[in-house]
Length: 596
Ligand code: F6R
Image (cartoon, rainbow, N blue to C red; front, top):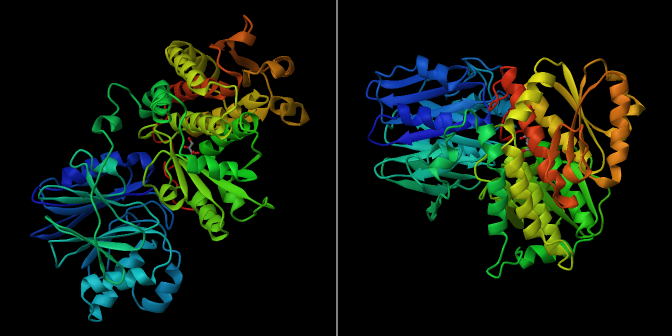
């Protein structure tokens, strides 16, 4: 949600900032803007819409060596030109871009900005106006900014230009992500490394409530009281090719295809030199010594957590509860005596999950993050961390992170109970091979999507046991990218009400991977067929029948969610493709949801 790019150097900044913003498009946005400072003053271009539109309105004739850019996902005020960033103070001296939410905006307006006319509806403009006010009262700009930051409550990543000082960009961070990129004769700042990796792989991490002054040849980091902080550079692990689409038409398709490699990478990363499963003993002890695991997550990560709960209970005999973050935080259930909290999050930045983390940390409970992003907020703020090793996930719809989450939870479950009979490394290798075979069968999914999903209004996924969890994720994928109203249902539950929605030709996709429920789900298929449903069956080979349209190669019964999801991801992809949807950037959605 929202992306920031800033650059100061000796070259013209426009292309660097615009292409940096394009690399952040995956985060989700509805408007964009850029400010460039040069000898003739500050030039702002901004509007509702995509970066492609911003490129059309930018005056490429205006060169400048300092600039800031922004993609906005509207929270305060509609997505329109006025509310787009950059925002300015009323004298136009200070110009800034912001990611986050200023929670005490109303209070700040009342206390400090009486009589100041704000142009936009945004909380962001308040920050610009306050910096101006304190500067007008005689504070040096740097002090005015730091003082403003001490008064703000909420989250922010900020990049600020002072028109009277063309040699620096001021930046600050609290709770929202921001990284500084160190270059040769330039420095950069951005919401994540993807926007900078083509220019540098040397970064400074900025921590919460820190402030930095970035010039062409220097980066100085301070706390909000002005004390300088020494910070080491770290080398980005990102490879520039990881964030390119290559020959793929969409990131989503590329990321679906990457899943076998991700599983193999996980196998390699969670193995010791003797070829045994490896997870840090401290993590194992922390989970073992708890009396209950609480999984906290949102969306797709929550759905992966459902499969994870099954693995922890079946393989490790560990009692596990799972909760949606946004519910748990305000309606906490009665907790066990010695809980441990596992936060599952691709981005590691999800505000709903972080709100739970803050709360359970205050209560003194141990916390573990399962995330794809090293150094993300959840990664930094939890006691223990497990990485997904999925590589950057850029399509808004999560695919490879989902399977990576389940695979890492499967390894964790095996490590907690080493006497388990499951040879997890071998079983995961089989999973990777089966995934590959499924990904090679794209024509089949495209044909089925064309036939069943290209003009339907709604759709149902039905399954029992772990297949029900797969159905929840499959339904989320289909609805979020194709806009078909889709529900994932426990197959046995349909007859208790929802079957009333089945009409002639309503697509119902059944997932069957467990022997114990094979016949039951097949009875439910007969029930919906009798009411006119057009059924697609996805079945595991060893329990399949000739009439099943999609057959999945055999894997261990605990690991079927890793493979049964692949056809559903591809059905969603081709349904969206044939309906002309914006697959990588579905409407109203953001990749990294940094507001509660
Ligand atoms: C759906 C999707 C979302 C995320 C959810 C949590 O495809 O991507 O449902 O899973 O917003 O995000 P993370 O995992 O980053 O916490």
